[in-house]
Length: 351
Image (tube, rainbow, N blue to C red):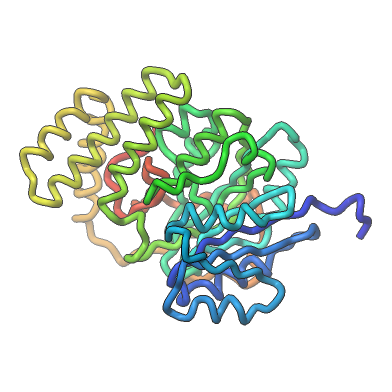
């Protein structure tokens, strides 16, 4: 291989906490990348007590394990920042300890950034999964995958960290992950980047986002943090009034869901009314969507059909392809506007 034709080097950033069930498979998906440039794999462990560190250490020199210092807090933001402190390659790719990359992921993103030197962030498409092989549907619906303006991203982050590659020198401008945020620190970071740099969407399927009961994106504490991220963004950048209004409507709706789930009926009604007043068209569309979904659920069915596979399994040599059929989104696993994915999300999250 001619050195001049090699791709730029990539630092892979993986925060890990009690992920022994998944981390080996996650690392295997990194080692399986069809990438001809330099690669360093950085895993910041946040004090795992389930054997995660032993699994990571078993990979030897191919992975650099960064234990949590006693004086550092435990959070995904802090773990990613520890990796950024020691990263040496010009490109940085993010991956959570329970997610997976498909073989062509890094090459596709690096090529896109190589063609456009002005781009600060690139991302691709991916599937939701529960077991790492069955594809439950796309992470986001077709109209929203290529939305990369600050206003689009304010309304909803439609990609998880596993989709993202960033130029390392970008962090010199935007700073590191906000360690004061217990959730949505990734959404906060991507907003700060696209406010200053163009972003590129790569229309290929490059990752698998795993949905399981223990992930933080299923917790009700997500939405207060999402509101903090929104207020930070609103004070930092001149977002259009329409985007601000719609974002407030989404947050109000999510607060109403939380209130109803906690049997705070009056509080839930107040937030729900606020959401309807802020965005009446979406409110009507949501009511129609919910009624349609309830009606569909009452129809006879022979079971859930996996998308794009006859047996629900990904082939071991799954190719990177732009012509692969777009998966169905009928499974109702959607990315939240806070920057993460929830199961059975009921409110459409992008315009």
